[in-house]
Amino acid sequence: MICLSFIIYHLSFCIACSHAPKDVVELDTLPPIYPDYCNVTIPENIAPLNFLLRADCEAIEVKAGELVLNASGNEAVFNMDDWKTLMQQSSGKEIEVTITALVNGTWKQYKSFRWQVVGDRVDPYLTYRLIEPDYEIWNHVQIQQRCVENFEVNALGHYEQLENRCMNCHTYANQNPRLSMMYVRGPGGGAILNSNSELQKLNIPGSVYFGFSPTGRYITYSTQKIIPAFHSLASKRLEVYDAASNVFVADMQEHRVISSPLLSDSLKFETFPTFSPDGKYIYYCTADTVSLPRDIKNLQYSLVRIPFDETTGTIGTQVDTLFSQRSVCHPRISPDGRYLLYTVADYGTFPIWHPEADLQMMNLQTGAIDSLSIVNSEKSDTYHSWSSNSRWFVFASKRDDGLYGKPYFCYVDSHGKAHKPFCLPQQHPTFYDNNLKSFNAPELGKGKVPFDVYDVAKAMKQEPIKFY
Image (tube, rainbow, N blue to C red; front, top):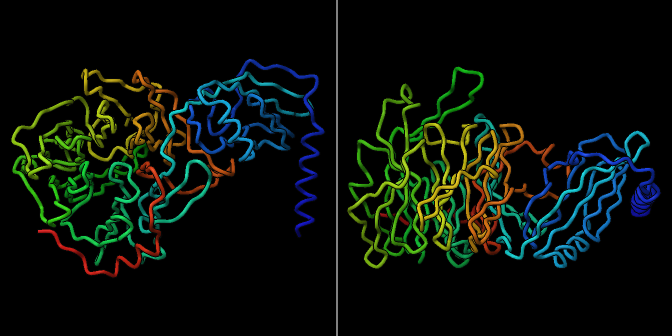
């Protein structure tokens, strides 16, 4: 079997090499590669950008700087060692990439494009939820962690080990793999806290969306009564809205809940809370209540903030409005405190099903807002998180087909300029064509978390620590 595999590989290699480009016809169009890696900015520590050429070709040649790849068929798969050498040699430089394809006996060379390689590294680990893109099979959920420097994947949560339960996103404190939390839903469920490799099961009443304070002592979280509704129009699939929602703070040391009437107004919906990197504010989204689902298109969330004192665990008394045009979701502040990234949609609080959902970035020093036109697509772009150096963010985009979300990485340079994003590379170029699950709520971390799905299954058997 080993000999046969070697013969097949050797034969494929020889076929590719025997097809050295000659009598080349030059084209004035960029190559139709998937994922679209043309003219993107990438970190020096990213895994190989393997891709498909969407053409019926017999062989391809890829020249990326000094690296030359010859292959039969239409798949470009780079050797890991060769790729790492290329990235190390090209950090801070541009790589010119030229693709030549043998199509119906004729070599055709596409217009060259470039990869801008930057020394600002992206955090090496990405966690995300894999979920069916529709609403019928919500319990076949997985939470995975992927090393973006290679193709290593491990499971943090899997429906088979967790009794077909729904699992919510895994979130780090300051991108720290030794302090993070995820939710396992259903009877007997709870929040699974990872604190210095020890897992604890917590009973935080009604907690849905949350974020850690800079010290990790507090989390701010929202409570929701979530209602799904189905559209009668074929162009729209699903709407999700809150029948009630409020924001609280939980003291993770004293196991107590801190509340404020400003964050639990019965005439408002409050949701998506997050701490500022200095811990001085809680940013969140709020909307006036409307009759739902009848007036769903009038449901408009504003971006606001309220002071918080980490020393005393005290919520402030003044709510400031930062943005109230369109409906805002998922505010996230860069770790250096310079930028506030958030999602805008026409209405509502569940932008994943809104094709008009886009990302915007506010400069917190000047108040200027960047519409991120180079980042957004005609489909849903949302669920974002920052890298620890504030130079990268990752988000979930449905730009390919409007159905399946995929992780995209965007570089923000020292001047605050966003660059064209690129899709998470996969070992096999056909991966996204064959994958039937959406990547949901991607989160970047500085290292590998010290637990797996079996540790979570054990923690689920603990008696929960109650919060009062």
